[in-house]
Image 1 (spheres, rainbow, N blue to C red):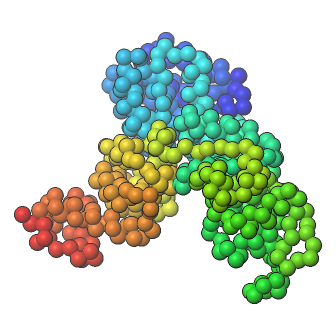
Image 2: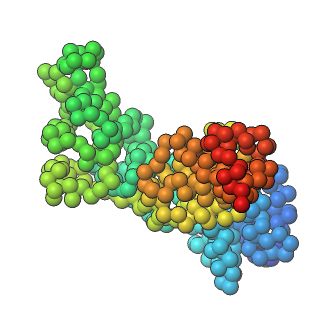
Image 3: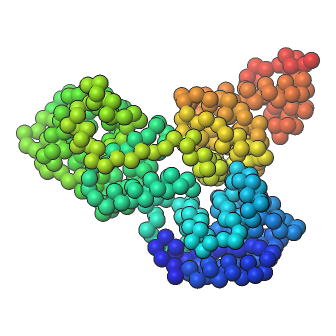
Length: 456
């Protein structure tokens, strides 16, 4: 019956094969789930009007509305709902194409019970992470709710992270900028026995060198110019909780000595204080380059490295977990549409394929930036592929522009492209942009564009 990770969920199953529909429904009910069966895509959509499930399992080949058309109809209404497709061996290429469109996964027929439940568990973990109202949900998966993935590599990493969370051993997280090192650190904290206490994040590279000691360990009033009151410091604030030291390689050598002493003695002395006090913290540090190389180059103390690197995890770059891109893009689209009060609900044909094929040197952070540009610039419920192309063209490097600057640059490129396509015909360009001519002329004026420049 349903176990931890298999909390009771509502699952909609769709198949025109009556025997397979019964078999699949019985297996899912045996695992403790609430199953609604539908013999066609049209019936499935009518079921959705009555009750929203946590996931959908549908056959690919069905008369009338097939599985992919059903997915697209569901996706327009519920962009983040996981949909798993059942496919015969001969239609696996179609299933792979469906994955590129944002389908969560596929199961080959005849299916094995273990493989089926593995895919269902993964889909429900995503549904939980995206905030679905799960009846009878076990709180055991809430620790990783901010990490959205269906990548086997990431799932393996998260399983390792959860095991590591059960000890107080120092953890070192490696990963390129933008891969989500702080999210992983927060997940480890949330899964540990310190989860009810503070999680304190410190960017070691962002603190001026003359203030690092005071920021980390605190100071007393009058310890230096500007110290007008006592300050506890980050380590004391994190007492009994977790401190996350991001970009640890940027810590000055002089501070590395002091940090090592704190880790060895488990006590801190604020700047200007005459006495030390005990602290109890779990230390998680992160770096975007190998600390072993920094040690070899003499920029990082070897003894401190061994203190921090009791256990380690390495986050893969986004380019090595491309199966996550459609899901992440849809998640960012929905959350950003709410933030900006935009009616955006889906990517147009080809949009997710473009995102999935991009190089992403800035990883998940860059993907979020690109989707934000698309949402901000979109004029209707659908993000056209031209918007995605434009957003990608302005985000080709690892260095990302501030949003306002990127928005201006993208807007000018977008207007220029439309005017080129229409040979300077403002009425046609405005229609393509889904704006009236008055608004379009205002946009052109903002960027000092003249229709005559594009005629002929």
